[in-house]
Length: 146
Ligand SMILES: [Cu+2]
Image (cartoon, rainbow, N blue to C red; front, side, top):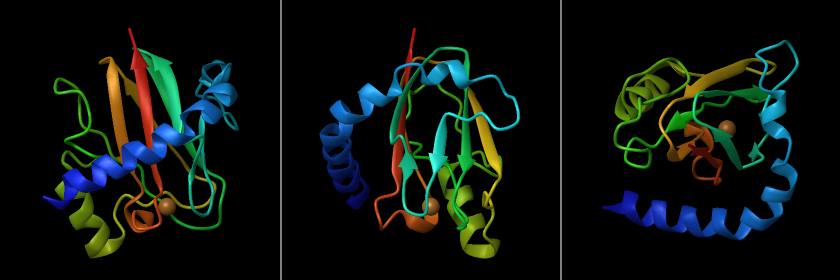
C-alpha cells in the first residue's frame, strides 16, 4: 500500500536530518516541566522543530504551535511500538478516527499558541504527522529510550 512507500521515504528524510538535529537535541528534555512557555517541539508554519527528539520512558513531550497556522500531532498507528498507546491531538484513539475528524471539522487542530502533550511509557520509535501538512512533509519522530 502507498503508506509503506510513504513511511520509507519519510525515514530517508529523517535519516538525512538526523545528524544535524541530534546536536540541537542535547538538553532539550530538561524543558519538560509542564510549565507555561516551555516546550520540546515547536510547530512552525511548515515543520516540527526539531523533527526528531529523544526522551526517556515515562517522560512527557510538549508540542507548541509557534506559527499562525493550525496543525495536528497525529501518530502513524503502524509506526509506533506495538504495545504503545495511540496518541493524537484531539484525543482520538485511532489514526483513521483522527483523519476522519480533521476532514469533517478540523478535529484535533492545535491553534496558534496552543500546546499538546503526551507522556511516552513504552520505549521505541514513534512517527507522527501533521494531517493538513502531510503533503508538505510535516512529519516528526519521538525516540523513547529505556
Ligand atoms: Cu501542520
